Image: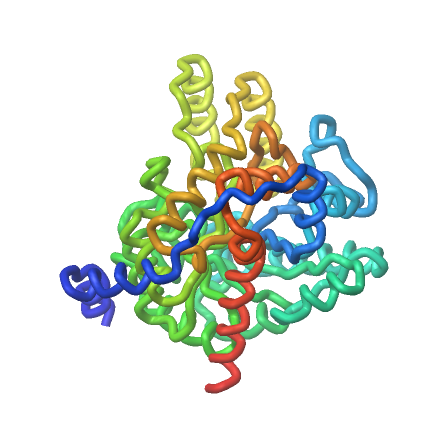
Length: 416
């Protein structure tokens, strides 16, 4: 089955030309709209905005961040709290439930599955402390409802299918716990598929991975292909009855990072009706310029902590702190909002306005020079207006495209 899918998904010719022709019909027509800065900020605050990927649960776990308090990102390892969401006009967000990857054994899967459930428990407990500010929600229409009520919508995604192990019932378990997308892999292969940052094991999806996607379609969970290999993306798009998402990825044509998506993959995702959420992590936006001392220190760190995913929690925390110190000692010149919006431009020009959104990866390493945390998100809207995107275009980028896919996923599930 996998061989058949690979052959189908990598074919070219008339089919690809037909896909490209269909996508050209939904491109954006740009026209500079004269607006004052206050007009732009008012518009940004008025529209529904959603960020499909933040790692804030890690900040709840390791730093004990109080979401009701405003934190200075230069003093705290935190890029999101409710006051800064208000400042940045961010209405809805997907909290990523990320876990490390341990041994690929029954006991290893069981241990990390429990960690994921514990982080879910912690996240639910923290959000429940502030019912006036936010709710954990599970349906596509909930974001609009809570925006009207003046509250933030917190959706949940599972970053890495590793906690699923080899038990398809775990897909149901995480759905019941509120998870509405699963990022099929992270930085290494798992029982579901090959990762973009690992060697080829299955040549894309495993047979179990096919089952996982089919079950996600039945339940109404979005299939997230960020972090997965190119072959995995091709096969996931071919297998899934519903459009797929990339919750936090950029364009490989502008930054040749294995985590980014090639033009051919962007085209396939869009042709199935999917959406790619542009990420704000610097190494996915612009190439990291060589810096001998820093690069040597990074190499030594990676050698020292080889196999970090299989280390104990306490060792992983030491690693995280040491890596943060290294980054402070060798700070990178951060890319700008303009650099990030270049990726939006590229994707819109390639596949059309209906297939692009924003998934920042704040609290997971994302930062721009002029959008360092969620309070800086209006700068993206300013840049989009500056480049001639219409109000309708910007609404689509900030929420319309993602919510269209989310609703379609729910519709397909309800019809099965």
